[in-house]
Amino acid sequence: MGWPEAPPVMWFLIGLAAFAAITGFLFKHKSRPTWFGQSWNAGGERAQYEIKRNKGRIVEVRFGMPAHADLNFTLRPERAYDRFAKLLTLAAEYQVGEDAFDRAVYILGDSDVVCRSLLGDVRLREDLRNLIAGGREIKLRVTHVHAASGRLWVCMKPMQTATDDDVHAAGVAIAPEMQAIAARIRTLLGSRPIEPDRTFLRAAAFAAIAVGLAVNGGVAMLAFVFSHRWTATVLDHAELFTHAALAAIGVTLALIVASRLLLGGTSRGHVVLVELLSFGLLGALATAWIELRQLNIEFDRSGPVTITTPVVEKRVSRSRKGAPTYYLDVREWDGRGMHTLVVPHADYERVQVGQPIRLDEHEGFMGYRWVDNVRP
Image (tube, rainbow, N blue to C red; front, side, top):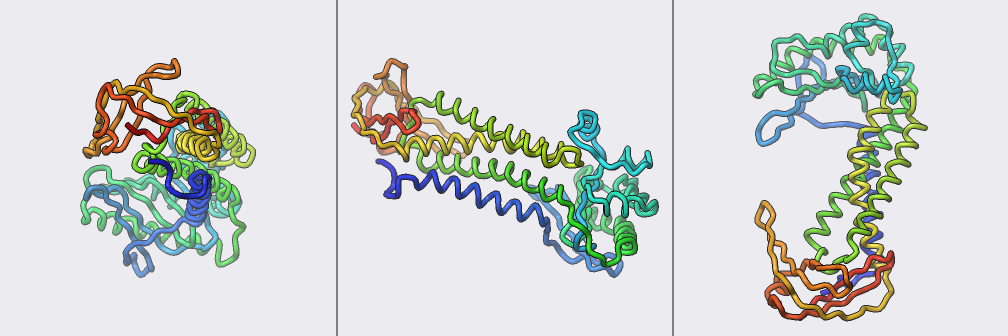
């Protein structure tokens, strides 16, 4: 057993490179959101629609048509946590001055063009509010209205089980409304260039970091569980977890402070905060745990000390899909109680309860003792 033949810092650096690559990809996707669907005839407009399914059931539908290339905003029904965030000054939404619109719609956008030039238009504002408010006799409701990447699109979700016929009926119902909105935007803006909404790019960057931490941490944990967990076992796992938690909290707090400095007083401040406290914190914890573990092992230059200790118990656990994990509980040799080792199936079968086994103990670069090379 032992690590594969590779430079000693291989997995540690791969983890950092993977996080950077994942975050970069996510930022590109979030800063220029797009999607691809099937052609949709919306009264002569060049349009597309996309149906998302989960286990055969329709969970979301998108209807889109061309719009101004530089437009970037999101409108959605205002929620309780939006009002709570504004009360706590975690978010600052532009108010158009019309109570019916301001109460019903939350504006995720901070550019003057969107807030004043477009939403200052009574006719466009009424069309958008009616589109979001619904009132149609269809089985899907509007959850978001987006403008980005040269397209205006509507996201809808079923209020009950929906069929393809229900999707067609929804498209027929909202097509005239979307056409009217797209036409009004063209009338108001023409083809003149628009200054980009810089708060959107900042929010996209923080969202990419938060989700990047979560994806990277999740992938790294899966790789650890299914690939390398039996090559080395960290004995001081409580210390490792504590330090990883402190690092994760520190990184998350730093990101929150940075987001408040860059997005304080904007419509997206609370959205980014939720992403950092959920995806960001959990992802940072998983990433920190994996990176500290790899750093501790791969940079360790201490010589191994061979330990002999008896096996007290053998255990097997199985995942939901039936994949087995093999454990050896061995007697303490350091005054800290029992130690549990995860071993390959072949080593598990070769060892019997009460039989002494040998293993190599290392001090660890970060001070977390670890063992490998378990053998009879």
